[in-house]
Length: 417
Image (cartoon, rainbow, N blue to C red; front, side, top):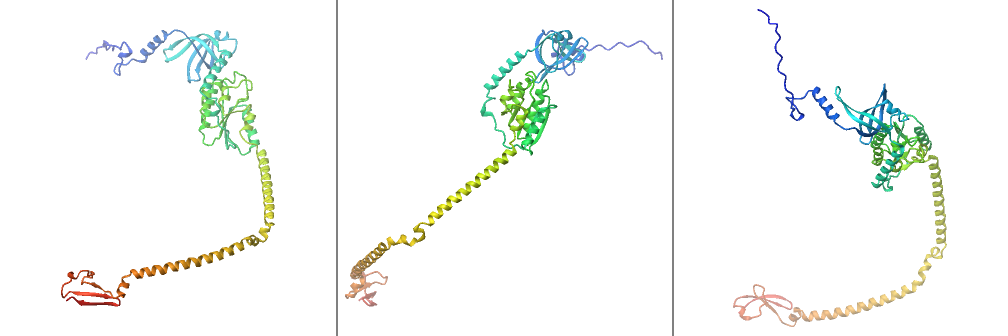
């Protein structure tokens, strides 16, 4: 059979939906259609000024790549800046710096990535940051986060101390050495974090929450060995401050910056001037406690001795009284009086008996006079019928009825005539 080498006609192309609302599971848009449409939508957006904290700064040729992060809301955007604009700042652009850039969103169609293409950059001045911190301070104070009523007392003798400190530095050494020197049995749960820059807030916040949830931790210390005002700005961050305020475990702030206290100092239950001061404040001094116990024991022994001596003197004074040596002498004034009372009581008793005997005789005579037996003794009799009822009317008895007759001495039966 001859073979037909003529190519077949291609199948008709499927018509794609014109809008996103017309797509369905049976008629979807491929990525190659959706991504350019997103790019077209993003391209219509106007340039915008945006502020954030710098992370992951990298320079490649004439561009600087970085990430702008909002630490309070935990959101970030990728951004680029011309290297020449960054150089105009006059200071190195490092992680942790806060900047404002004028940029336009740009969508990378190939990998579906959104970036802010910066055109101009400015640093956020220290004065602006301090003004924002002051405004935040007033807002938190209005909420009552700094009030004394919210502050908890530090435990007298903590078994376990939670310590948040730098990965490297003297703060950990100062807290641990001073605390163990005062109270050797104290134990530590240490969480090492970054104490400045962009990672400080999330790491320190997470460490505080982790130690607060630890069942054995009795007190938490956040320690840093001082630093410049810029370095300590994370400890005035709203997220970190609110985490400290929500902490149910007593919290000590030992940032070590005397001139300008970060907001963490105000919300903490106790502010230590330095990590060394924190180590001395969270535990008692064992030597001082032993001395206090010894002094208390001496005071108690002296008090007991004084009490014993005072009571002994009181007992001796009591035993020396004549009434205690010859107690029968106390009864002498009352002997004659008791005798007189005895005689009077005897006379009263005899008189009472005579009166009662006379009354008894009178009652006996009255009883005998009123007694039915007395009537019988005078010759009278009591007649009863067969039923035992007293016969008061002769008509109530018929001839032949049995009649019982009681006389003074005994009883007999007769028959009615």
